[in-house]
Image 1: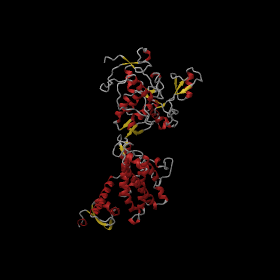
Image 2: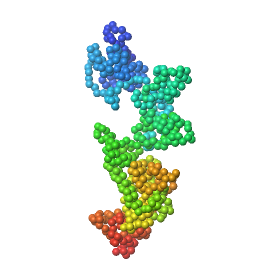
Image 3: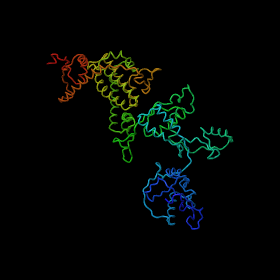
Image 4: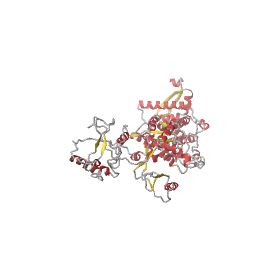
Length: 608
């Protein structure tokens, strides 16, 4: 402690630093300071401080008012500060020479191997040498407060809300933002130096504006101007994205002219990963409010990170990285997209399971086969007038709904329940739940039940044809069209392709019929869609009956193709419903039409 406040000589800082009669001007001295930053138990307990070449030392140097010396040029050669023996040498050559010279002067005690963290360039692998240099900064305290208030006042909603704490943590103690980067590519900083002076500069949108400002300062019209070579930080450039891509600043202030800026800014919802909440999202909000006066979006929806199937982070070292292009080539883009979106819970990471992607490829194939049945089988007997009438122009009316039989009323009721549920889930950003519901409905209800029942309406061999066939075609197309619209955000390529095979309403000024992505959502307002709860309950009894017969066949090991007899005991409206759909039951349960009877409860037939 007795040395604190003294000054010590920097070895070899002067040509004759240690000669007995060497004048003081030939060497450099540095002060001895004390600080809690140093770990006294490590090594000698003494630590050199280089404020010009270490971020932590820089902060310590400011605390103790230490001079900032730069000993290295930008090309990694040593500066004149190092003395004549080392100036101009490459950094590695200078280190070798310095150690050798210190050994010759008797200034070394011993050499020990020590493991330390050496920063390297991610791209080239070069050892990084921190330097103090002139950079451009943006004051962020004011912008940060505005971004904080936007969330606190409810102008912006963060989903899930737990990330509001992260938002507050980043923006409460925010520092000035260094926005200059020494890179080849990027937006050059809009600063022009006057007459090659680093102290005299002009900030402008372009060189013409910079020259005009120079003239206004009283400088000659031909004064040399040089634009700053540094480029803007990537996060600064991308922070301008919400408004710069739609006409800012050229269309700023133009109201009533239907500009892109007026139409598309601000946006409604930003969907991104939680890992860049500050790096990108906060910068967009700060810059958006500062430069346009309006928050760039109302909702920030944060999804998780895609991880390996076991939940671990994907890593080339582990060999568990999944290339999305390879996955798309094997399973299709829609299968991957659907797997990711339905597997997401706001803010939770997503384990990428290849079995799930394969299953969703099967779902896409199922959807294709459903469409193939409708277009190549169900619609085969329809004439041009009927096909023209089958195009879906809006929700099914109650008048038409009331004329339908039980299975049709059931499937439409379930479809309308699905529409309302999916719409509600999407509006609440429960995207995974909404997508899964569409899957379950199409596979379990439409494909497994209604398509099979529709065959009893379509084919004369099952007792169908005529008006029953027309009704079945109407319902098949209506349900498939509506389901395509719901599924389109999740599986855009398959649904768009299949939708063009379905009958469509003629194009008009009000309706865009040329693409599914432009078609109306199945529920455009709060008007309730028609449903029949009684029909749902009755048909669910019919489904339970069918399953019971199937289970009995399995328990008694009945051959798959063999038809069996059955006596169904029911009463009241349920008995009437089963009697009306007995041909559907025969098809679904593989019954012998000659040996099927529906009898009343407590009747002689039931007792027998």
